[in-house]
Length: 127
Image (tube, rainbow, N blue to C red; front, side, top):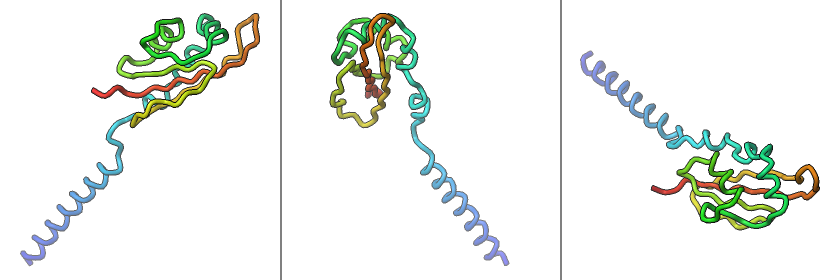
C-alpha cells in the first residue's frame, strides 16, 4: 500500500512538471502584440504637413535624415525601434530577425491629386 502511494505521488508530480513545461513552451516568450496592433502611419493620415511632404517627395528616409516625415514618425514610434520610411518607392528592407511593415496610401493634398504609397519598416533595436 505504501509503495502504491509513493508511485501515485511521483506520478502526480511528474504530470505537474510536464504540464508546466508544456504551458511555457506554447506561450510566446516576447509579446509583440502591442506593436503588431499599432498602426503608426494611421496617426499621420490626417497630418497636413506629412501629407504635403509625401505628395511632393519620393525616397527612403531614416532617423539620420531630418525632415517633416521623420520628425512626424518619431513622435509616435518608440525610441527603441529603428525604422526606414519610404515614400513613393519600395525598397528592400534590412535583414532583421523581427520586422514590422505598415503602409499608407496618400492620394494628395487638398489642391493636388498625386497617389503615393508610404511604407514604414520598423524593428526593435538590439541592446
